[in-house]
Every structure is written in C-alpha cells, then in structure tokens.
Length: 528
Image 1: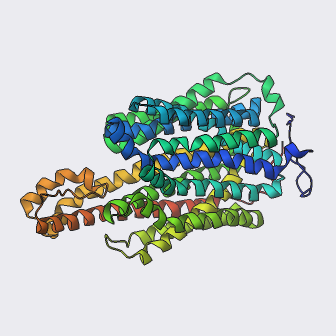
Image 2: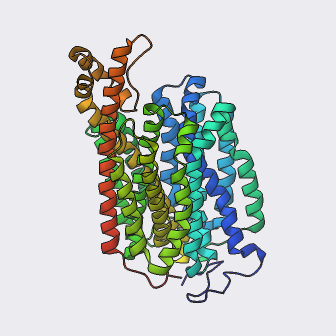
Image 3: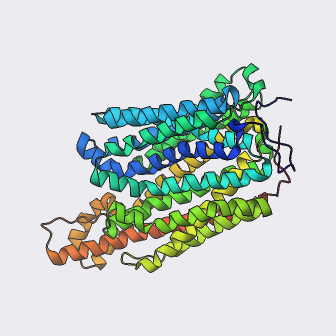
C-alpha cells in the first residue's frame, strides 16, 4: 500500500496529532494556506472592478478586456488537477510555495505592464501558478488534520475563500478610485511575501512517496488539458458568439468528447492522472457536481446583481460592494456552521439545505423591480450567502474528505476545477439568458413606457447595452423621452434578471434533490 510522508491519525483518534513537532501543527498549516487562498480569491473578483480603468489606460477593446479575465480562467481551469497531482507526487508544500511565489511575481508583472497584451499574458501566468497552489491547500489540510477535525478546517478554508471573493469589489473599488488600477495587482506583493515567509516556517511536507516512482501520465494530462480548455473556451465565448453558433458548439462538444476520452483512458493506464476509483464514492461524485452548481449560482448571480446595483440603481463600485456585505457576512457564519453540521449529520443534510437556501434567494429575486427598496434586496443576499457557505464547506469535505490521503492533492484539484468550470458556466449562461430575454422584450417595454414605435424599434439595436443594465440615452436626449427610455430599458433588463434568477433557482432545487437522493453518510473518510 502506498505510504505518506505525513499521515493523518487513525479514524476515531480525535486527540492524535498528524505528525510530531512544530512544523506539523495543523492550525498553523491552516493559517499558512489561508494567506495564499486569500490572495487568489481576492484577485479573482477584484479584476472586474479594475477592467474599465485598464481599458481606458491601455486603450483596450471590449474583447481585450474579456481576455484579461478569460486568459486567467483558462489557465487556471486547465492546470488545477495537474497542480494537485504534482503536489501529491513531489510534495504539496513545495508546489504550494512555487504557486505563491509565481502568483506574486506575475501580479507585479501585470502592474508593470504597459500594454494590454502584457496584461493578458501575465494573467495567464497568474492563473497557472494559482492552479499550483489552490488544490494543494486542501491537500495539505487533508494530510495534517484528523478526519473528525477536517470538516471544521474545511469550513474555515471555505470562509476565507468566500470572504476574499466578496471583499474583491470593495477593495478593488477603493484602490481604483483612490490610487490606480495597478495597485489592485501590487497588493498581492506584500500578501505573497508574508505568505511565503510564514509558509516556509510552519508548513510540513506531505506527499505520496509511491507516486514518485510512478510513470507520469502525459497522455492523460494532454487529453484533460485540451478538453478543459475547449469546454471553458466555448463557454466563455458563448456569450459573444451565441450559444447556437458553430464555433461555440464545436468547442464545447470537442471538449466534452476529449474529457470522455480522458476518462476512458484513465481506466486503462497503470498510473492515472485522475484515478477513476475516486468516483466510486457517491458523496465525492455528487459533491463534485454540487460544487459546480454552487458556483454556477454564486458567480452568475453576483454578476447580474452588480450590474443591477451599479447600472440600474446608479451606485458606485464601492457602494455596490457595501450593499452586498450581508452576503459576505452570511458566508462567514455559514462556512464553519456548514462544517459543524456536516460533521454531525453528514452532507446528505447540509448540501440539500444549502442548495435550498440558494433556491429561495433566487426565487425572491424574481420579485425585484428597477426601484425595489433595499429592504427587499438584503434578505436574499443573506440566504444566498448562507447557502453558498454551507454548500462550500459540505461539498469540499465530501470531495477531499472522502479521498484517500495519498490523493489529497488531486482531489483538491478536482474540487477547484468543478468550482471554476461551474463559475464560468454561471456567468456566461446567465448573461446569455439576460441578453436573449432583453432582446425579445426591449421594443415592447420601450413602447409601453411611452417611446414612439419607430424610435423603440431603432433603439432595439442597443440590446447589448441594455443587457448590461445601461439605458441607450445621451445628454442630447429630450427629458421626456429620456425618462421613457430609462423606464423601458430598465424593465427589459429586469425581465432578463428574473429569467436568470428563475433558472438559477431551478438548478439549485435540482442540486438539492440530487444531494438528498444520492448522498449517504460516510462513516469515516478513507485513509489509504
């Protein structure tokens, strides 16, 4: 049986330490990985605030700005399982430190870039190094925490991830508004430096010793990387190309076929990149699907909520971020709560509960209007934050906690990949749904608001702007016509928001039913 350099104690021994000495303290390990996790989470959401300033300063097109996000996403999604596998093979501490150092240097390089091409290229580098560090955070926690304490560790891990993501718009807004867009990336320099120093001092090494003797699965890596890149590329381009376009469908279908071929190949190779035996565990398999659904809902909903708050309600990025604080605060409470409930009752309770809370939040959003009071906005923010935090803790525990310790890194990569692909799908699919709904209702809503039919038909060409919550008016537009256009455009946008919220809520219900029906409580996590 393969052995670990660092192993968790036997199940049932709650007081045993994973290893001896100060360098193996599990709580210091948790603090150390939280630094890197915070840096990646913050950077993932802060860039959206910086993009407009990047575009103005570097004379970038809208397509260029999309690639500022997409290059990072593609590199991250394609390399996450690789990062986890390399950590299992060569040492999770080693790969984590390389990831933190590379991510920090790439962040500084982005700030120093004087061209949009440089920003895009270093964002891809940033995504690659993020993929090296992210899965190994969970892999190291899996190695140092006893099974019965691992759930709480994951709850705190999920809390750090949620808080850092939610703080992005606020921190980014303050930095962009009062310093410059480069400061958004320079912020990672001090955080990364502290993370490196602290991690070198406290992190223990853990790896699968037997894996170092195995032949590396190069064909599997090529198939998986190509498949993930094709799927994510098709998803992120579906918004602009159209979901029925040949390029979109071709990329997604080719990616799915490559991933299926990868799965078939992995069952026939002696030392697979992603052991298919992991999926024999129902909790792990369903947890992977629920992780993807969780971030489909979270990132998709946050995207249109920010459009609503900034473009329809007129709040600045900082003001919009402050108004979504209930979501952040709820996730802070929910992550450790979800971990505690999962430890006590198992994921069969917590995953459906979290998805049900998200469904309630989304269905309440279908009642929003362009002028809803804040009293109608904050309750679904709290429900969404609670739901996401509970599911994040439960599904992470279901995936990594049910994997053998020797596969902790690759299980972390699987969880992070599901998270990223789900988030990419959520943003792209919901934006596309909003655009389709706006396109079908804009002319009618403008006419109903008092815009003359001929003008309403002509303004229908501005559906892309309206899909982002921006009304097609200018300073020269007469006041009475301006009021009518604003009213009609906002009604059309809200039609799209209602459709997106309804779809999100329905998917959350499906996720709740899937978790309730397919997950059984696992007595103990697998140790070998």
